[in-house]
Image (cartoon, rainbow, N blue to C red; front, side):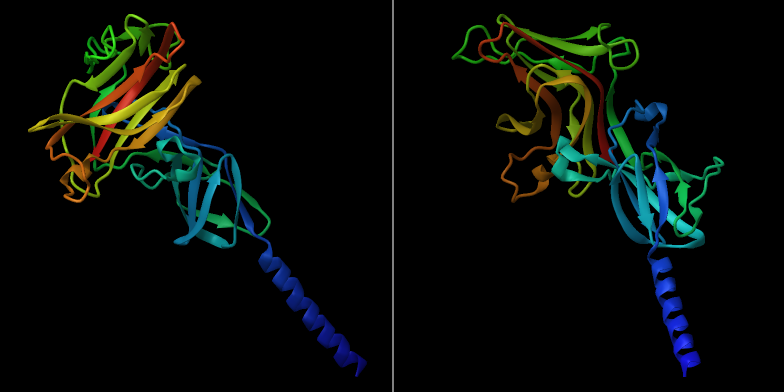
Length: 304
């Protein structure tokens, strides 16, 4: 009888032990993500803050790196999939995988490219991640201020209630406090030149609905800056503000979703148009004698 009880307790203990072992996850450590670009895609500086990971086609979740991620998938060939994530429109509440990015390339601790890893309960596996853009993207505008000209033009707009015109400042190349390369673009606002409406020199075809269309931009500023799209219509021109950023002492990257495709949506309530320009605008705040902002690595991205 005692022997049977001992055997039963041994079996129960074994089951409990197995369950505890099964509950112990494997761990994946990811320190950072490296973005790789071609010359047609511009700068490789990025604003990725998260990694989104799947194992054996099951979503594990999004994690801010550097991160140690618990995974309840074990074996010698666990298939991992990852993509870098951003704060869309600069908002913490809109953190998501960036859909201009392809599935990331993964490397093991030996530097070998692979998406299959040996994961064991309680063990930490280091994974290195390289991110690239998708191939079906069209970088329709790249401005890094390194070339002989500037693809952005300052447009003077008059306000009859103010003297002088409020949008009459200019963008200039600067070698001071450059973000990357030899030059960045800078705008200085004064009482005489108190605002700027900076638009792309070229007009762009309004893309189809549900396509990927983004603005990427590095900036620093001591005032608020607004970003938007400028439509030329049969009855004149109209602007639509996509969003803006507050003053930022250090260089920062922003990614905005561009939505000119709504122009082809009859229910969008926006003026009918076939083309648009992207613009940046800012004005000198009341009580200030001077203000400035700098920009670099502007990218306008459309899906093909």
